[in-house]
Length: 271
Image (cartoon, rainbow, N blue to C red; front, side, top):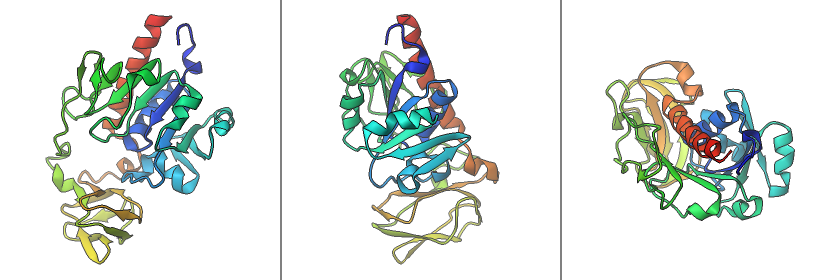
């Protein structure tokens, strides 16, 4: 990577959900555009309007003016880049890493633990959120927990442990999040962006209704797919601003900024 122009850096982002999309968007807008994102065969993103993981189902996805497209094999990457798009590939085992040999790997799966990313996978590796410690697992770690350190970069240390409690919005934490009562198939009653009242049925898991726990706008809603028990399946925003349903959150932007800082910190000292 030494002496390499930022717009020539090849980046693999593990994950294409909401937070990974915020990272990809920030890098792309900073002219780091040779980006490939990896996903599983059936992504379970809840904030689908701002998740590039949706390309797995729809083939293409646009988030705030940045376009992503699904590829079936690594040899299609250059075609996507020439179209000034982000490439997304279904690759749960990250085989693309050994083929593409990227300059940078960013683990943004947000699994609350490290699922196997190693510092030796690329010249520069960034871990996002709990489960990563620098410099052991990654060259840099970016804090993902809301609060004073959100987006902070650690070069010697780790992100905060997973609390299991969503960050507060207008005083609401766990109440904002809808979870599956048991394993089953999701069936929508409401759609993304709908205004909902406490007690209204949002969706069913098999025959079991899942009701709104607060008033607000339905900011997140998982696809009609099979889910596990206690899976996050919906997100209600009590602020009532419809635009927020279709734009990247301040959290994702902050994390993206932290990743960009880590890359520039590393790249600039090598030039």
